[in-house]
Length: 344
Ligand SMILES: *Cc1c(COP(=O)(O)O)cnc(C)c1O
Image (cartoon, rainbow, N blue to C red; front, side):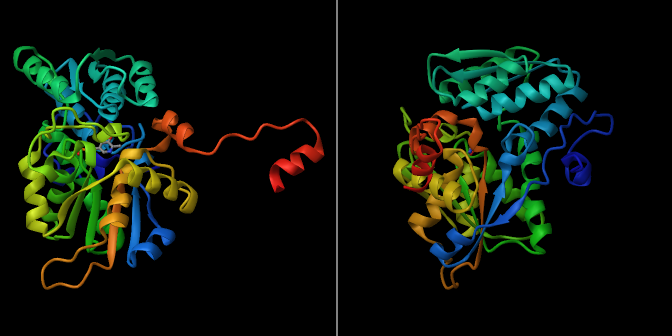
């Protein structure tokens, strides 16, 4: 059984001595070799399977710390705006803590698995007739005027919890990878990984990837109506804009865009070639290195090892999977018919 992330890294996390540990034994996720993708990019590629966290995404790393602190400070309600996974995670950890959860999601725009999770954990789910960016503006205003804890990645404890993913990778490899590839939405996670690496005095190249229809950091300006199949990164005005850009600049990495076609091709390649089912947004990390290669820092050789962060589990979004996979093969209940169906 994995040790709760707060126990594993307690000395590096800013909790107060009296805070309870609200945990589902998150973290300690698998780091797996990706031989097929390695061959294609000409470097050793490893996949950090963040979908193996308790609610199926990396959000749990930040949520265990944010909700533990919220509970310790006496808060009774946690709220967030979400493209889906923050809602699922906040709802689960609120339930675990005996707190109430309220989550605001863009109506009709979140993957069905995430909605099912938030509802099952008993959160109040509010479907906003507007974008994620608008939902975030509203919850920020709400948190200013009500006694509720905001658990979006603007919450500093979320970033602190999420930085532990970098600790795990460095421990497991015995050193930092030479590069990190990561999908970027609200830009909290890339901020957190970079902080984790810096706390260990390491500095891999950080390659961030946005969907081309939702790529404000690539364009250098907010996107009013972000659009992509990768709903978890459908964000037009990232809250951690400056910190994310500082990570790309100081690491001498890049922020680049990938098209939905490239995301879906990587999504299928991961599933069929590596046996790993992630959600579309997660596949942006692999799509990015397939599309853009591994650009070295000036005067340096190309990186030899790259960790791709697969941020969420494929089961979160069964609709996209079923729409993009080949159809089921219907068959009469006869041996010969089954033979034909399998071998023809
Ligand atoms: C939240 C999320 C992202 C984006 O992370 P940010 O911290 O918002 O940049 C990417 N993929 C998945 C699956 C997510 O849930």
